[in-house]
Image 1 (spheres, rainbow, N blue to C red):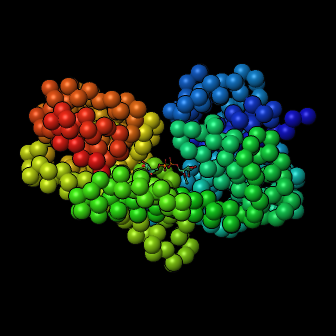
Image 2: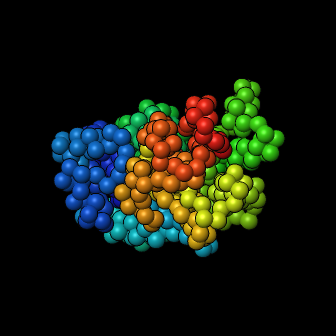
Image 3: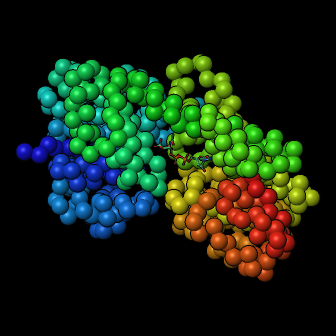
Length: 416
Ligand code: SAJ
């Protein structure tokens, strides 16, 4: 008989994972506390913009292997995929959803079940927080039930592919726990499955995103230095990367999303050591200030200027605005009340700042700043910009526009 799985939390990770397991013959209960999410999914809608995900979920629902539920269900496997919000005040993880999920599971946990935590958490969370809550059931982790940390590593925009193809780290509280989780993941993972202990698995996940954040900070600092020398940082970085042991990431307007700007803080939550990692965070966060400095210099001051911001999603082709550089840029510019700031994003309907049409955003703009690399922005109509804008300054923080063509058309295009 097919094994049963209850997935707790149907967000960016829980939903595709639930559908993946259902499409691989598991009987899956997809549980979420948000009734609007369940309603949308049950009616052919979806609350996440992700290529191919709706069809993938529909296939799972139509096969009757995936059922969407508003109460948790006794199952052989429990996967915790709930959010771990970032507490900006003390730069730490809010683990209340993980705590709540563990408490709920504890009330229905049976001998022989396996509990897997997938949410991104500070090191030791599985052992120090989740384990004691589950053991309130009277069962013992590693003996009566398996307990495992298994981080997800999928890239938003490419989730359904990476969920299958990426390697996976599986860290149990003991060997028997690890083996139980490996049995589940090996049903669909095409990459390699690497086994370790739970705390190492938590640490590895955070190290991967910290590496990327720190690498981007280096690229951003190099970009600022390159500009001081009057050279194009993108060409310089691309040439530096010709060396077989150099792999610099791309500079840009800073780092957004719910992972890279946050995971370095989670990594250091129970340690006083982070130093370079915290400096890298600061460099990335300061990129917005740097863009404003460039705007000010090129425009000869910011008073009474009109700036159009293109892209408030945290990166291209996603509808997620968490920690978005575009939103930060708008907010910082608005501190100066004499500046008129407008923003446009074809992937976002609503967010914390008002959005306008493309035309209204470029209308009368002294400068436009491109902050997210959406496909729609690749071929921005230069003629329209000429007609609508009152200035010629274009700052391309994502290296999306053809600088030769723009500069030939009498724009002053600056790549960050
Ligand atoms: N960015 C740059 N320069 C680059 C690459 C990215 O400035 O060279 C910026 C992006 O514009 C964006 C931010 O960094 O603002 C983050 O984007 P991303 O595409 O690097 O990553 P995420 O946050 O969408 O997903 C990351 C991925 N982690 C790694 O690649 C190590 C993904 O694989 C993880 O699963 C995900 O975090 C997660 O859930 O932790």
